[in-house]
Image (cartoon, rainbow, N blue to C red; front, side, top):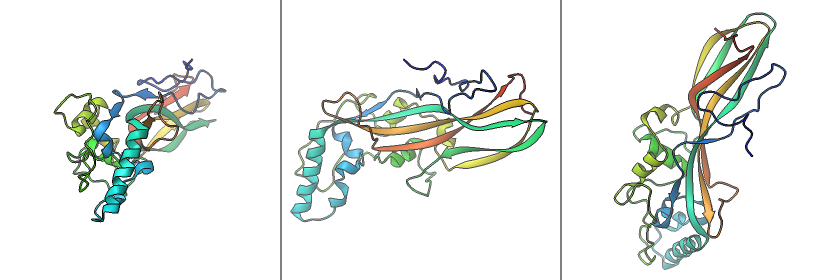
Length: 251
């Protein structure tokens, strides 16, 4: 049974009930939208290190074509689908407690924590940047395997958006990616503010973080593999300063 004290609440993190007992370091996850199932030919979009056929493309020798075919056939025999899930949680950042009123410089961050590339291409949409960070090709040609005609065609699995909907659009709608997420999935940015903490009061600074995780679900298994295929961690612009006694808000 889930701990009610750690349940994710969009409005606030787990709050202090006593100055002597800290809340847990992070809340439970809250899923945004719904998980996106990647199945059938769309699995070719996923750059899975266990089934990496891309290094063998571009070589005209038949042996390389056979290698691509063998890797994809092995993946299709072992993997039922991939799951892309977007979720948020609160994380405890800092604790403040002073005997007298004290002014403190507090630094706040938002943006992607770790990039697969050091360059953020702002010409791409948030959905495109997020999918590429995860190692998923969102392009119209992403589900195909170029230059290997002997691979038997794979019937695409149903996408939640229905027939004729592009992968990027389906990902946007299913994971509920909006214009406001631009500041979350971008460069790591920091701002510093001055706050006055009242003496004799305990304060805890929280930030709302989120991650998008790509997981592999094998045939015959109900749950994904324990190790994800890839993960993107980011920090939103939302933070929360809790205090005990609760009426003592920093200025």
